[in-house]
Image 1 (cartoon, rainbow, N blue to C red):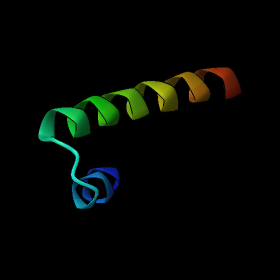
Image 2 (image 1 turned 180 degrees about the horizontal axis):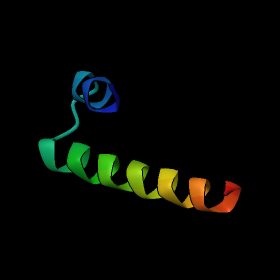
Image 3 (image 1 turned 120 degrees about the horizontal axis):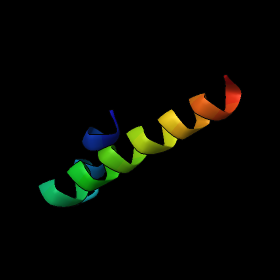
Length: 35
């Protein structure tokens, strides 16, 4: 979903991959804080 949005806005594949990795890391950190 995020990748699709960024692709529509002209982001490169590398930028999309970086953003998705960052998003996953943030999600994991949030889960660790909540648990």
